[in-house]
Length: 416
Image (tube, helix red, strand yellow):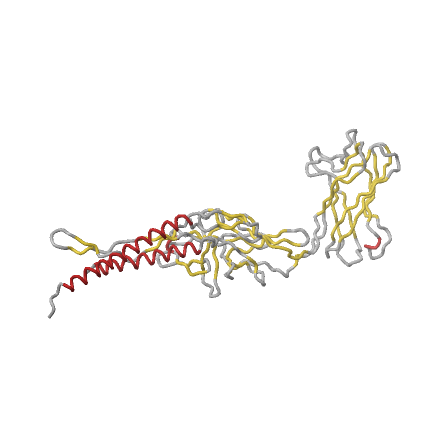
């Protein structure tokens, strides 16, 4: 009887389907996991007398992975990333084989390489002088953990200061500002304001004698400021309206630490000619100071920004772009095969793959500080499990019934 083989094919198919459900449920919490469903297909029929046909059971079970969008869960992990939309992260294993994944739970290894949770190298474009060229070839992304960025000497500075218009002649007010030399050493310059007359203040810029090789004259610059009736410092004569007057030049020479001489431009007006120093009937005070020098910096942290930009944070407060994650746009992702560790590889039927940056050429957005949840639906999987269980029991009943019929048939044979 064909009933045995037909029922056995059903048992085999249901067993496979239950395996698929089990694997889905096992990966309920796997980052970036995509739910797999089962496709059943019948075998060809055999023709009986007349036009009757009887099927031969069920063929080999096929599986289909649904690459639908998973829910994004905020983790605030510094190097976590999730894809919103199409695309896959590109990684390479120890054999330098290119693989693809939706799992963005990345981390840095001991050498500063950006890797997956299971050690594959994350691919992208490394920055050159803080700039990323996403049209170039991709490679391993890394952060030089032991590297330092050199100091940048101060070349510009400004102070937002109010001088009390009610001060008596001879009253002084000091405004300190820290600047950085070429070796990263900090120096405190002091701007001393002294009221000379109504709407007139003298200023004197000094540096501590200990900061100079020879000590001696510590005055770096001096001059007089005149204020108008509204309390705004007046620009030098001949300054065009709406333009910023030339800054005050400050030269710091002969530094004791052997650093290069400093030439600092002190801007007393902003870029549109608005005064940064005022004289109003309020207590003399420094609102803010700014200078563009930076001390020597070491890496204190690494983070991924939305869009997949990899940033290094330095101890001197600077952030430097180290690279950008690459995404792969795959036209038929169902052709990918799983190789474990949340990674996928191409097959012979995979279409042409396009490597792109986030939000470019069909690739989705990269959301930093988030991970994509599994798309497995527990209710659906349990419903499927019950369906396959009932089907298995039914096929088992067919075998039992067929066996009973076979025994009855054998019993009809007369004894020899």
